[in-house]
Image: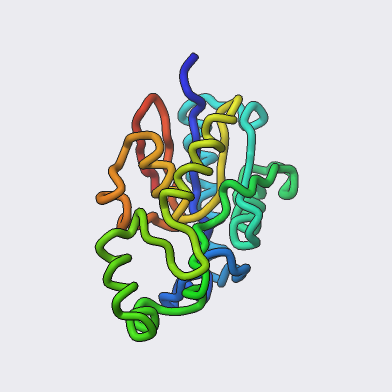
Length: 199
């Protein structure tokens, strides 16, 4: 049986995204641009469903429990003319935890601990921030989530979980994925062992 198709959407922009601050598991709401990006992703999804002859009622919808992902999902579902709140939450899709670095910019992190910052820049997949997670850990929980899917799924989550999923599915390496930009307002379609972005 082929693996389920995943329509993956990163949450829209927040004030911390705009300021270059690491959010991790902090609950920062979408800003105005973020809400527009979420609505745009919903329109892209509607076009893809029409193009592919997909019945939106046949898909599962799941989001990270963080507020920015839930708000994005509700705007996406509104664009599909579906009840906004009728979707599942899965903690395995939450963003990578940055521990003590959450709320900081890269420059602030470098200033506070230059040695650890340099080590993490060189080995981003395996080194965790103080009190945070490594990408290896995120990859394990995202792989577990992927293995549990029973149907084609619309997932709204985060940049970190998108990178981890790409590595878990063999589409990127830890080295290539670590600094990959995951676009907001786009739909990433994981299908038949490949990946396409629509924006």
